[in-house]
Image 1: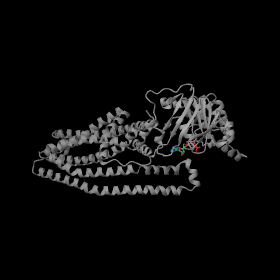
Image 2 (image 1 turned 135 degrees about the vertical axis):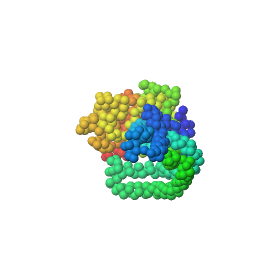
Image 3 (image 1 turned 60 degrees about the horizontal axis):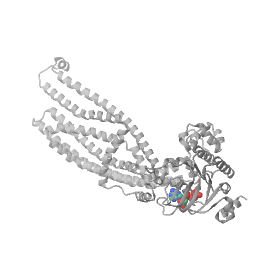
Image 4 (image 1 turned 90 degrees about the vertical axis):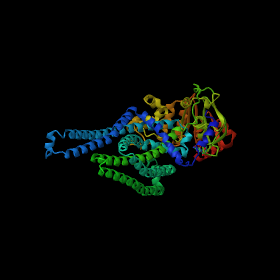
Length: 630
Ligand SMILES: Nc1ncnc2c1ncn2[C@@H]1O[C@H](COP(=O)(O)OP(=O)(O)OP(=O)(O)O)[C@@H](O)[C@H]1O
């Protein structure tokens, strides 16, 4: 139930304006718990590819020890043969048949090398495909989840940070998949090498681990520091992105030039990014310094073991083949373990970043349909009733509307007037349930708005906002967004365009309805502010909802055009419930009823004539505007 209580209890989870402290050390390691759900995401992206990569990697994992063992057998065989009396040249040896076993071993070694190359290529092919699939499915999951969330979430800076980090996961955290599978492969290889070493001397393994652990701890420490830095700097990074966009977007280019903002933008960018760079450099330097020392400990361990192997061979306890096998195993094991521990620590680091992704998926909307939600009646019989409605935007102490009571009767055209900030748009957002009131309630045909199914409500109410979106798609699609299910119904799109008086401008475009508009993509044609508005108004006709609301999308039209638009709107939506918002009283006066808002409540209501004869704010504002035209 997403009532005022739910709203209130949801607020503390969304502290506005400050980024929470980075997670503690333990929490960072606890982030490893995110790996299983991550692997489930990979599995969902493509079970077949995931199984294939695991299988091939397991095969690859066993190749190194096998090939080293065959190498040892080859050397022992060569040593054995050189101790025999035999032919003086290589061909003689081959012809004598005594080198057949050696030849077989060489062929096996060659086969293993070819197989290893083949497997490496296959694995990288499959990993690349799997990464693509994962990127697609993760991005789609993100989009689908974002669509369910509250408008309030999108206006919250902390939420924006979270979304930003989650997006970066979808784009940048793909290497984690390769990392996890690579580790699995390396673990199997390590076990196979360790098995070999244990047969000769188990202490070698202990020595190896003891000398590698310091380097591992160092790595994980610096990874955690990097994460903390990234985490704490998310707001700055978003601001960096923002600065880049302001400097490079066609929508901002005009103003940037006129105001000569480019230097300011560049300076601000430099200042922010320099700070970031200095912090990163500090960590990178410390990492390099400690890296050298800790790795030296590992190297010492390796040579200690080498000493033992060489000594044992001299003493006759090991063969030359054993010497090469052990020295090779030990060296490989050392670099494998080193790599494994480092990559384990970066897996933990990446798992911390995953935390952000799952945290984002865990955000639940507070505005949702109740389980027993009902459909909006068709037709709406009584209309909407606002009862003492109060609402504050999340994170704001000021009431945007309070004590707001009025009725919107079914079938009437209601105009809202009031000065900037009076609460007109807020009223509309509450009516469309983009927000829920903090106080009072809104009824539709006698039932609380929250009792209705959200999809059914949204489909019954069509709003064109003043800051409607200029989609850089075709002219037809710009209209079709009003009811995207009917996108292919060209007749409907054209009728909507005609009604909004947009058809003339569209037919003048080089490719008519199929002309891409906006400057974002090649071949796009830009439109004037008023032309964009006509496209947006056509969306209202395309939507053809029971309740149609135009929240000042006509500000760029001249007074006559706005008058015509509103007049047609009133005629064409006859019998429908309509709400018009405008600052132009010449347009407003044609409504059945006018609501005058002031500081979030109703100051007066009535027809134009009634409000004029009553005097007060409406008449004052009307006359002020009329005087301006004289
Ligand atoms: N997203 C928001 N977050 C916080 N406060 C907001 C937000 N949107 C509006 N407000 C505040 O709520 C109040 C009512 O704003 P609203 O947009 O409803 O006014 P309006 O009557 O539509 O104004 P205008 O004529 O300028 O469009 C204003 O004080 C405004 O500052």
